[in-house]
Length: 229
Image (cartoon, rainbow, N blue to C red; front, side, top):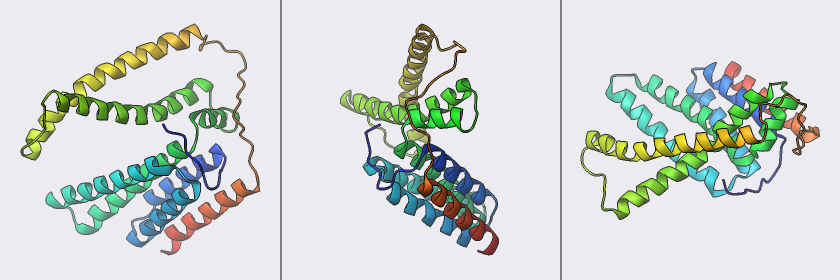
């Protein structure tokens, strides 16, 4: 992922807890007004933390997906209230993860999970590896579509036909993902990944006053949105 510059740089643990708090708050309320407050909070945090064009493009794509999700539910007879509410919740949880990934180096997330959350390194590595591969898979998807377009393949027709055509993209992506996982397994083995010695991290995990203030403000806003909205 391209390097980004944050307006205010919070520690990885702060962003992890903020993302978790907002996601849990969205699941604990059915009020559209409360969900709207949580969405505004996330967009404010996205502007505050930076993230660049990659973050805002992702938010735009998630907005479109949320609208499509709501429309599909309406077509199948779901009430407007439930359709919009579920779209809001999906958007909130996805954006919270996107902000974390776009504004935080994966090394900092791993260090925070191990040193502060006391998570075993193997599990922390698996979590951050998945987060790191998401933008890589999106990039590969774009490259595959461009390569097929150069060969004269163009997806067109009704939605069912488009879904079938999309399988032409999934097949090479699956093979690339398998090849990537095999290369990673070999690389980790050569670097003695299974060694149980104490690990050290270059990334700093120290919290400052700004981190505590941000976590407290985020928690209070989430509680107020759920309880009083």
